[in-house]
Image (tube, rainbow, N blue to C red; front, side, top):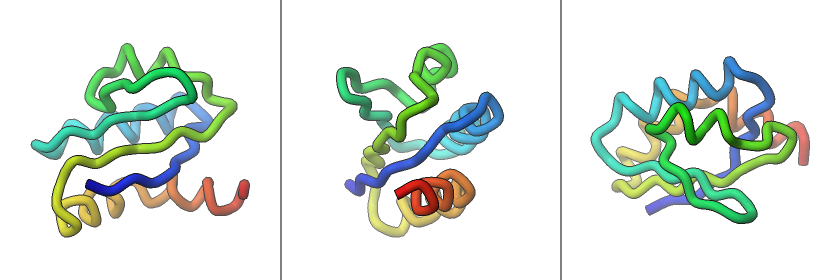
Length: 83
């Protein structure tokens, strides 16, 4: 399992995360201050506060996690710029 932060600053970012998550067979959880949500649930993703970064828990091997991260590179880059 790997954990890393992402920043979802727009509806397009939410759609990108959802689209990427549904392409992979393993579980991807979105961790907020109060909740754990499935990244494969568009309704759950749209309930997020987009003003704050969230963490993703990817329940997969390092190789699979790296493949997923490659799909959402733009979301990872935004976190690095805001820190």
